[in-house]
Length: 194
Image 1 (cartoon, rainbow, N blue to C red):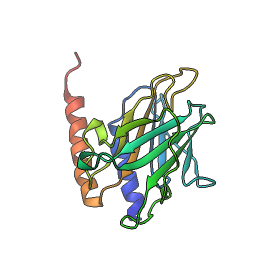
Image 2: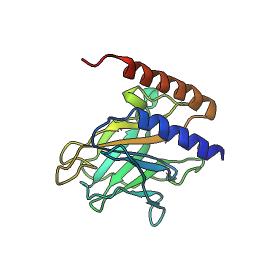
Image 3: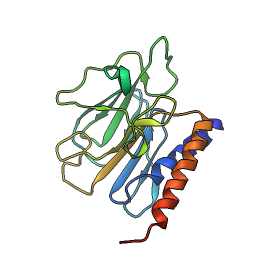
Image 4: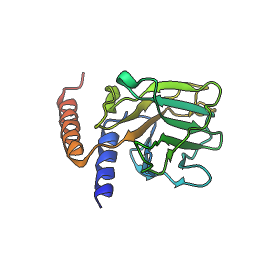
């Protein structure tokens, strides 16, 4: 129950800070995902754990490739996650696990696969592009693939935005984050339209 509540709050916060155009995909390392459509609707994204740790089906053919997500700050050479897009409309998530961080999510692996040629490297960030901080929501937020890069539509269809939640904070942190996101929305909506 605690996990469902945390995930619901996470999706609410992340969807509330997403761009309002195109399709936005929000997913994490434990099988929770949704698509915000161009009409403003929300659809669940199906996933599978066979044969890879965790694979989401996005519903459109995409450009194949890897996004390598590294820890922010002093540990910038530490690979945290790999998002692997294929041409069949899937993204497979590989997340780090070790003896000090035992596997506790569907995407956790003890050894990462070799990155594909042309992989894109990024640092973890927080919602709205804020720096990623341990103990708060972080991952890859606001990724909009350029033509020919991993996750892009080969047909150049509507813009896609990806928000991947790598680390999920404790419920008390979620409450604080929800409050901040709610205040941000109120401020943004109360501004006069130019």
